[in-house]
Length: 329
Picture 1 (tube, helix red, strand yellow):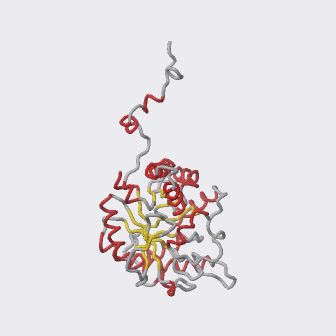
Picture 2 (cartoon, one colour):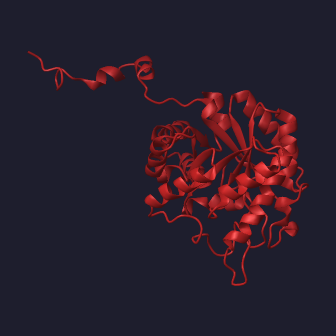
Picture 3 (spheres, helix red, strand yellow):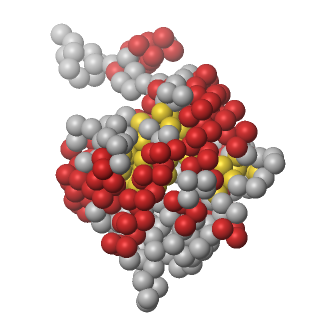
C-alpha cells in the first residue's frame, strides 16, 4: 500500500505541472495596488535629467512629474513618493528651502495634487538631507554632530508645509528619536488630523544608497551612522517599531528591502498596521547592471525580487519600477 505522506505517494511536483496550476496555487501575488512610485523633481531644469546610476530613472521637471503621476494612476499604482531636488545655491545649514512654501518639494506636491487629486496617494519625503549644504538629515550642533531635538523642530515645520501643499502622507525618513510624535502633534495642531504618517521605522546605514545620492544631488559630508541603524542589529528595529507605533505612526517601513527581508518579516509579524518596504536605488542598479551585461533576465528578476519582498510580509512596496510592473501585471 502506498504511503501518501511520503514519496512515492507524496509528489509536490503535481502542483507545478502547468502555468495554470502554478498560478492557481500561488501563495503570494503582486498587485498594482501594492506599489508606490518614488519620484524625483528637480528645480531649474527644462528637460528630465537621466540618473546615470539608476537606469530608466530621471530627475523630473514639474511637467514630466505630472505626466508620471497620471501614468501611475492609469497603471493602477497606489501612491507616489516625492523627493525634491533644489538648486545648489539654495541649500543652507538649516535646509531652509525644505520649509519654504514655494520650495521645489512643496510646489511639486501642489502640482501633483492638482493633476490627480485623490486618485493617487501623494506622499512626501520628510527629511532635510536634500536641502542642507552638509547633506545630513538634520541640523548640526557646534561640534558638527546632528542635533536630534533641534532637528525635530525643523521636522514639525516641514510636516505643516507639506500637509498645506497637499500631501496625503508624510514620511519622516531621518531616523531622529521622537520624530513621529513631534510630527503627529504638529499635524494635529494645524488642522491636518487626516494626514497620515508613514514612518521609516527601520532605516539601515546601507551601502546600497549610493545611486540615490546622485538622484537627490546629495552634499553629504561624512556618514549617517549615528542616526541610521547598524546593519548588524535586528532587535533594535523592533524597539524602534514599538516607539513609532506608540508615537502615532499609521504605517511603518523597512529600508532597504532585499538585504533586510528578515527584519521585514519580524516587523510584519509584530504589527496590525500596514507595512511598507523600500526597494532602494542600489537594488535597482544591481539588477539593471547585471541585465545590461546579459547575466540575468531583467523582467523575471524584477518580479522575483518584488515577490520576495511581498512574501516576507510587505503590504506596500516602494519601487522605481512601480509603473512598469503595474502595467505588466
